[in-house]
Structures are given as structure tokens and as C-alpha cells.
Amino acid sequence: MAKKYDPCMHTAEHILNQTMDRLFACGRCFSAHVNPDKAKCDYHFGRDLTEAEAREVEARVNAVIAADLPVAAETMDRFEAQSRFSLERLPGEAAAELAAIRVIRIGDYDACPCIGEHATRTRALGTFRLTTHSHADGVLRLRFKLSKPA
Image (cartoon, rainbow, N blue to C red):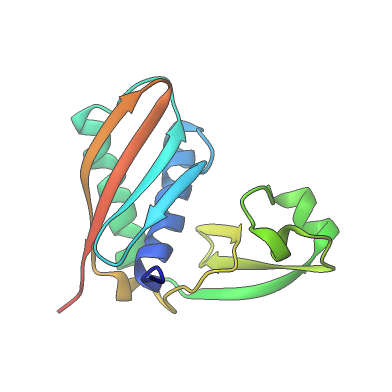
């Protein structure tokens, strides 16, 4: 059975990754699983988040969503993309020796190479909520959901 895909949840993953890196300098998640109703991101991290930190992550992600930033794709020369971004998580054909790489920009908040589908504006995401967070063996796992806008 094919995996269900939700552009809003995937866009939220991008915003969460940038927020985590800005707050904790931990880089983007190394593993993610995004479904229409729930998602998880795994980060190399030395501990669990405190509840105050978890609420701060939520607040910052929701501030980006509320800013109604445009989400757009651009094509970048592979050499420029390699000098600015990690291309490790691009799958198969995208990771091969292509001349150009697709970069998704969320306003001036985030830019990341990606082949997935995304919302066209952040306000379409609704409200971001961390449902749980846990830490084991050097991995911080954040689980989240979106409450769609009315």
C-alpha cells in the first residue's frame, strides 16, 4: 500500500528542523516519518527536552506558521547547493550526480534541498503541537501533529 502524503505536515517538518537548529544547534533531523495525522523527527541530542523547552519549540514553530510565509521551490546549481546544504537525505535519483538541486524556501526562515510536496504558505498548516518527546541512546524523538485551520 502506498504511503499517504501530506504537504502541510511535510512543511511543518521543515519549520521544526530549522527551529531545533536555531534553538539548540543540533542540525536537522537525521530521520523522519511523516503521515497526514502524525509525524516524528529524530535528532542526535544529548538529553530530553524540558517541558519549558518543548513549549518554546511549539511557540516558535507556531509563530512561523502564523507569519504566513510563502513556501517556494527554486533550482540551484549542484555545486552551489553542496556548498550551502547537506545533500545526504536526498533519495536515489536526487542524490545522483544531477546538475541542479531543488531547494525549498520558507520565507527567509528556512531553506533545504527537498523533493517532496509542500504547502504554498505557512498559514495553511494550522496549529503545531508536540504530542510527546523522549530521549534514548543519544536520540531525541519529537512527535507532532497539526490542527488544521478552520
